[in-house]
Every structure is written in C-alpha cells, then in structure tokens.
Picture 1: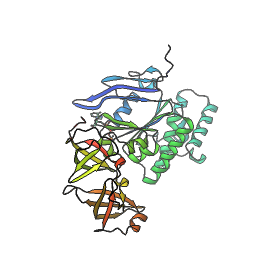
Picture 2: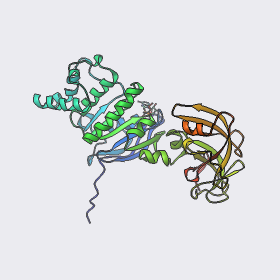
Picture 3: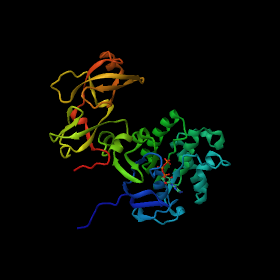
Picture 4: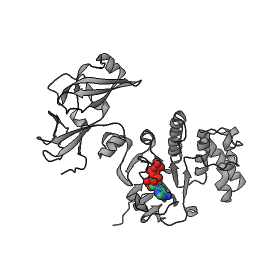
Length: 370
Ligand code: ATP
C-alpha cells in the first residue's frame, strides 16, 4: 500500500557540528511541520545559534542531513535556499530607508515596481509600521521599530522558512513583550514555518507551538509549552524551565514512595526506581498547598517560614520542613491573598502539603533509572 504520510516540512537528521574538540551540535534530529512555530531554548553555548546557522547554510555540519520541503538542502549554497532571517543586531542597511530595506530582496529578484509597492504596503501593515515610517532611515527608528522593519524585510520574498536569532534580546523589557506577541500574530496570520532561537524561557513558552530545550549540543526535550512546564522529562529541563525544588532521597519502600530525611513521601504513581536507589524528588514552588491541616492527607507536613519575600502579585517563602535533612529547604509560592488569610510571616508555623501527583522523581546526579 502507498504511504500517504507527508514528510515534515523541515527535517534535521543527526546533525553534528564540531569546532576543534568542541562539539557544538551533537547528533541533533528534529522534525518541524509546515506552519509550526518552534523555539530553540537553552543556556548560552548550548548550540542554538549554530543549529540555526546550519539550517540557513551559514555553517556546514560535519555530519547529518537537512531536508526542507521534501528536498535535501544540506550542501545547498545560501542564496539558493528558501528562508528569511532576522538577527539580534538589527542589521538593516543604514543608507536605505525603511521602505527600501523592505523592498531590497524584491528589487534584486527583479519584481515589477507596482508589485513591490503592493508587497511593501502589505508587509508594513502586517508589522504595524505607520505609513510615515517609509522614508525614515534606521538611525531614525527605535530598536523595536528597526526589528519590525527587519521582520518585514525577511518576509518580503514570502520565504518558506523564517529564522529568528534572538531578535528581541537587544530590546527593553516592555518592547520585547509587545513585539513577541506581534511576531506570534504575524506568524499565525501568514502561517510561515518559523524557528526562533532564544535563551529566554518565558519568551519560548509564550510564543512557541513547540519548544526544543537544548543542552550541550543535544536536545533534552521537545514539547508544547504546557507539557514542558508540567512534565519536564529531565532534571535539566525542570530546572531550566521555571523554578523547581529538588529534594535528595531514596526510592521505596513502596513503589510510589521516596524517603527524604525521616519522611516517606508518596508520588502519584509508581516511579520505577529500585528500592534504595538514590533519587531527586522535584516539586514546583506553586504546587505546594499551604494551610492543609488534615494529617490523613498524603504528604501533609509541618513547616516553619524561614524567609518570606513579597514579589507583587505573589509571595515566595522558604520553608524549613520538619523531617527533611538538615539544610534542605522548600521554596513555595502563594498568592498575596493566601498569605494574608493564613497570616504568614517570618517564623510562622504552618501545615503544607506536597500533592503526590505533582511530585516528580528523577535519578540522583550521575544515577540512572533502573
Ligand atoms: P548563545 O545564546 O550564547 O549565543 P548558543 O546556544 O547560541 O549560545 P552557539 O553560539 O551555537 O550557542 O555556540 C555553541 C558552542 O560552539 C559554544 O561553545 C561556542 O563557543 C562554540 N562556537 C560557536 N561558533 C564557533 C566558531 N565559529 N568557532 C569556534 N567555536 C564556536
């Protein structure tokens, strides 16, 4: 029978890139569907930009293959590839107006004057650029406006792929948040397949259909923003995306139990570790329930507030939990209303529950699942 499944629009297959002894990209494979918005997220030096530059043909991989739109493009020269790119540094032509910058690629491709005008009009509207910006030079535009022009320029020839290399990181916080939403809306409006490199987890969670978390050249996890946050597959992801408490312990005796200090904590389901295997238990600060007094509830504990920090809409508290190892602390977050209702302050005693289904169990550093 004929295989009717369509090949993903972009396929990265076993890409490796080394610089001397350094492995910048390590056997990386990723499929991206047409119209998807994928964010490459990871700490500085994890290989995000190198991966993007390999996709663009600005770097050659040592090994591996890239396919775009059903064709192999691994060794295709840059000018023959079908992509638009926006960099962190605005990279507009300083001697050309906004309009001339946007039209640049179209003039080179020999478009007719009327078609260029219509296309520039459409792109300026798409990127929310007022008409009187047409004749302005880059030096007369703010950083956010320059990036809008850069986006319009990248999109002008209707590329199949839009590559964004930290386009928001030189902008101030407010402009960054506003422009990331505009980029998302623009991408949804025209449906261009987009790969966006960022080290900002909030940005990746806010705009990606899927987020690829990278670490030391390899992929740790690929997931939707919600799945990534709620079900991090590795301690690295749990720690890099959001804030997580890690408690050292030992698996067992029950299949869903972990011993931390003198406490036996229950997880929502069997964790798969052999009894006595060293493990790390993780829980998000906002997942702990404060003021749960019923001792019959699983994982109901007693704690003292060691520190309390007011962060506007919520408080962050550092708890010393009875029964945990000396020195172990649990960070929790609670709404301002909840903290007021429970009259919490430094030194307060309180009941706290770690809901079993929200605890995750990982191997201890250097350990493995059985
Ligand atoms: P950042 O967010 O800091 O840009 P990144 O995740 O994008 O980091 P890359 O720029 O891809 O990381 O770099 C990955 C690794 O490869 C880093 O250790 C970097 O120093 C190294 N590297 C990148 N380009 C080169 C090069 N041209 N020559 C030598 N080493 C390089």
